[in-house]
Amino acid sequence: MPKISALIFFLLLLQSCDAQKTTSDQEEKISFESLIIALILEKQIPSIAVGIVKDGKTVMAKGYGYANVKDKIHADEHTIYQLGSVTKMFTGHLLASLIYQGEVTIHDTMANFFPSTIQFPTSPSGQMVTLKEIGTHSSEFPRYPANLRRNDPDPINGYSKEEMYKGIELVTIDTMIGVRYNYSNFGYGILGTAMENKMEKSLAELMNDYIFSNYGMNSTSLVLEDYFKERLAIPYLEVEPYLRTEPWNMEALSGAGNLFSSIADLNQFMIAQLQDNEINKLQQTKYFKINETWSYGLGCFIVASKKHNTELIYHGGDIDGYASSLTLYPEHELGIVILTNWGEGQVVGDAMTKIYDEITGYYLGKK
Image 1 (cartoon, one colour):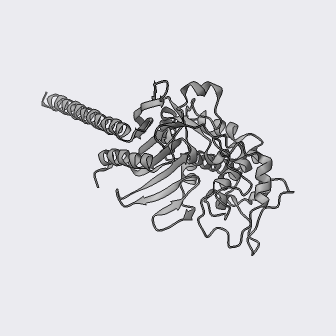
Image 2 (cartoon, helix red, strand yellow):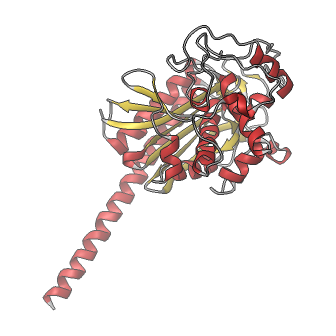
Image 3 (cartoon, helix red, strand yellow):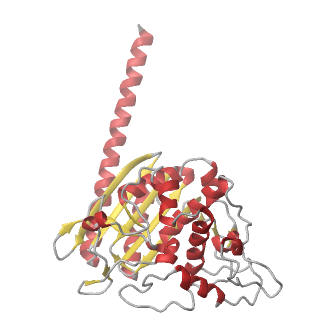
């Protein structure tokens, strides 16, 4: 009998601890929400959507403010935003998947994935650009192609594969390849096209086959599907009063920033990214050291965070009318994503920082 009594006491104690933790979590979520709402009101941000995953589960997925200011349509966890450069995490994940399956190796020469008539640039010593250099922004390719002309409100304006091929031949490399970090949207567009050419499928189809369908991401696509449009957060430029713009169509450069998704779907992606498997290891390897703190994997920054004494995996995105940020803390099985439809500005950046500090302060401790 004493043993049974002790067991009952222990079970009651566990229930009490669980109840206290649940109460604490609920109180903290209220604190998160209060901060987000205050920032929306203070900084006049149309909407902010926040997702948090912890220990393989979604703990928060919610939108605040207006997805459409004029029609007073509220944002929620299913509202769709364009992600900008967070797309690179998906392009890198696809590359890691193809490496894992033996379709390509990271040292494959880029020129091998394109028609032989295209003259890929080489270094003065004859070095050739490989998947590794393109994937880590160390290829010496420029941020954007020389033959891209900005045409607002869609500055990429459907940059075609044929234009890309011409743009590749306009690149001149005057130094060693693979020694200098030079962030390149053009490079990630080329990477996406290389995988298309290799697999004989569009990048949108490949991402769906290897990522979206596997992770239950039914509201994510590399193109703006017609059935997404009623849930699309209208993009606004960071000016006062609100100035509406349009989503981008990056076409051949889509691998650099064209993805559309929701908080609910991105939580599923983060849960998958935090798993201990070979594809994630391939993607999150430090292939290029930027400085003492920052390195680059495949489509992701790997950062030694002194603030929380841990390593984080990160990418942000900023395009006209949208801003996004996705951060993983593998050691703590924690993932945080923030989306907004008021992009490319300091005000949104400051708001995101405050939200991240509040969330990481709760889960990782105040620093």
